[in-house]
Image 1 (spheres, rainbow, N blue to C red):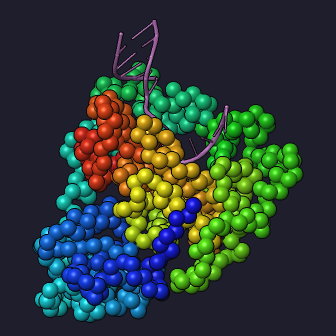
Image 2: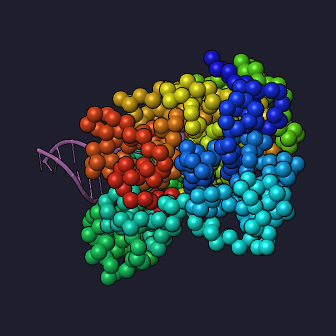
Length: 577
DNA sequence: AAAACC
DNA sequence: GTTTTGA
DNA sequence: AGAAAC
C-alpha cells in the first residue's frame, strides 16, 4: 500500500529537482507555457468564495485569451489571490520574502479580470497596501501603469461582484409553506426563536427517551416555524394551522405558548434531573441516548458519578491502563517513509508537551472509551469561535498540500451555515484529479492523518474509515465517503473535534451539500429527491432512480439545479432549532 | 405526530 | 386503517 | 448492538 509515488514534492521548499512537472520555464520544448498560475490563499475566504474562485479559474483554464491554472504552491504562482490584508496573517501562509516577489491581489482582481476578458492592472487590487508597489511591479497584466494614481483601494465595493450566481441569489422560489425544508429559507435565528427553543426541549427529551417518531414530528414542526416569516400571534394561528407538519397537537402546543409565554411540559422536562443528566452524559463522545439511560439507571446523576462509574470500573485493569496512559505507546504507525525533513517554517509548532502519542496505530475499529472521553471533555465541550475554525482550516490545508498538492477543501457544517460558535470543525476534502475509483482517496486520508499526528496536531483518532469504492447500488452508506474523525490541537490551544471527509472528484459537491446540513435540511433533500424527482440523493452522489444513472454536479448550485430546486444559501439551511 | 397511501 | 417518515 | 455524521 501507500502508493506514494510522488513523494511529497510539497509546496514549500522547492528542494530537489522535480523534473517531472511542467516547470513553467518555457525551456522544455514547445510553447512557452503561457498559462497564468494562480495560487489562492483560502484563509479569510468563505467556502463559497473559495468555490467560486476555483470555478472561475477552472472555467478559464481552457480559454483563449485568459488562461488560468491553479497551482498548489505559492512559489510557482504568477499571481497570488488572497482576502488577507495584514502582513502577519499572510505570513502564516506565504513566506514574506516570497510575497515580495509576487503580485498579491484581492479576489476582485480575478473576478474583474474575467469580466473584462483581460488581465487587469494589479494596482487597484493590491491585497496589502504594504506590498502595493511590489504587486504593481510584478503584475502579469500586459502592460500596466494605468493604476498608480488611484492609490486608494476604492474597489472594495466591487467585492459584491462575486461570480454571477450564488452569493446574493437567495432564489425567488423559496416558499415558507412548502413541506420540504429544502424549499424554504431557514435562518440561524428566526423571529419565533423562543418558541422554537421550547419545542426543541421537548424534541430532545423525546430523542433521549428513544421516542424517535415523536422526535421526528417535532423536527418537522420546528423546521416549519424556523422558516415562518412572521412573529406568531393569535391572529396568525389560522395560517399556521394550515401549514404542513403542524397538526392538532402542535397547534395546541403553540396556543399554550401564546397564552402563557411558555409550554409547561418543556419547563418540566428542562427542570427534571433526568433530562439534565441524560443531556450532560451525551456530551461525552461515545455516549448516546441509550448509554446515557443506562448510566442513569445505574444511579449516575452527575459527571462525578460517571467518572466514578468508569474510573472504578476495574473490569479490567489492563484495559484501563491502555486507555489512560495514552503514554508512550507509539504503536508504529509508520510504514510511512516520508518522515524526513520537516521543511515547513520549522518550529512554529514547538509542541506543547510531548504530543500525546495516541494509541491508534491504524484502528479499524473506533475504540474510544468513555474513560478517554472523560479526559477530553474539558476541552471538547468548549465551543469554537469562527476565527479559530479558520485557523484550523488553514493549518490543515497547508499540511494537505504538502501531502498531496492541488487538493481543494471546504469548511462545511455549522460554521458554513453561519454559526458564530461551532461544536466541531467539518472539512470536505477533494482533489481535481484523483482517480475516481478511490484507492488514492484512501491513501490521502491516512497519509494526512499520519502527518498531522506526527506533528502533534492530531492527538486522537476517533475513527478512520476503511475505504469503500463508490458503489452506486449501495449509495449513502455512512462509509461511502472516506472519513477521519479526529481530535485536533493547535499548538498551545484547546483540543477540538475535527472531522475530515474525503471525496472522490465526482462526489465532491454532493459531499459539500450533504455535510453542510442542517440535519432536517438534509433529510428533506432526500425526501424531495425521492418523492418529487425520482432521484436518489445523498452525500456520495445523485442518481436517477429509473436506471441508476449517476449525475455528476460541477458546483454546489449544480446540485440544486439537478434536483430542480432553487438555490438556498448555506446560511438559510438552518432548519433545526 | 403528521402525511401519504390504499 | 396502514405505512412511511433519510440513509 | 450501539454510536458516530450531516
